[in-house]
Image (cartoon, rainbow, N blue to C red; front, top):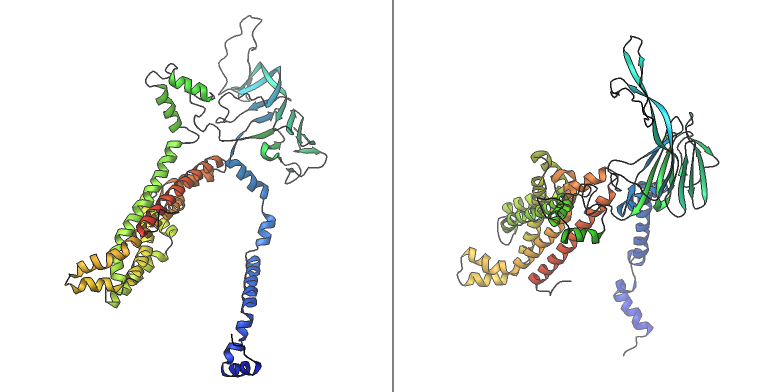
Length: 502
């Protein structure tokens, strides 16, 4: 190895100064790029007010929505009457069924006699009281209006009411209710709220951090974490008791199989007597699953299949149209520059408008439904596939085409045997990739009315209460995308000759 002395180095540097003297850009380009990147991020932070957005975000509500994906709620309402009695009611479609009596809600009841005033228009026709010591109904008294006509009827009746109630939300959280007070306890800390006050809600003591109230006297919203939450109003307490899991996923509350264990359902299907004389228990159970009113399995699966078909048909039509047009756009295939430019600008027009915008346009043109989604996918992918196909044609090896042409083959035969074998694997691979991608895109465009599961997903999100249904549909979409991704990758790998896929 030859070692250069200082004199040799100086002579080489004088002949080639660009080697030893780096420019300012070469010396400072890395710090300049890093500094410019940091300045860009600082600008984005300021321009989009990211700090303010993060600071004002309601993270507890976001966490509550995420919890709703994997849980369900039972929603009892305790109303406080003017006479110091309480009543407990559940919503009509409560997941516990038509006659809920949960062990986590403990109610003490008593019998009271009170007088109820009923408008004459809806007053029941009461027969004269019979002489009986077991009668709980007295003869109704009629109250006349100023015009002399009966205005209302007063009825005295005896009934069972709730005097006190305890709702156990978790091992560390509960709500104790009396007609004049609500005690909310979480992790050993208790909030006392006075009820039935004319001035609204009155709090005994400071408000803990797990409870909120916008203005004095207004309702209080108390959060109990994953256990649920409650709204305390002057005359009612609305409880949201949370349970992990998806309630009534197979059978809704109207099904004869509702509330039965897996063993009981299996026994009914295999050896039990027919519940419906016109069909077997297996057929009845399957029908109840498909037409589950809460989860709507059949409708969800139909919409998912509609999304898959929408993506497939749109991609297929786009491939069939883009294929011949790409030969016109390729400069080495069609040697006519104006025609090439017209075809390429047509592709640019189709793909420059986003699929979502095309979906809005076709929804207005054809109305809501799969046809709008298919058209949006077809237009967008025709432009994109046409551009990719024409670029692939422009990069083929002309030697194969020249070889076929040298034996006197016709122009169609030249394209068939000199061009197609080179590009068909790539064309098919790109079409498969777009089919897989459009399965996801069809979900998004469905939300604007283009049909499919996207529209149903958007409807479930708009209710702001059916987040477990949203999670169910998202999970189905993920499964379909995973399956299609695996199938598409395997087919592309075989077509391109790169093995069996990832």
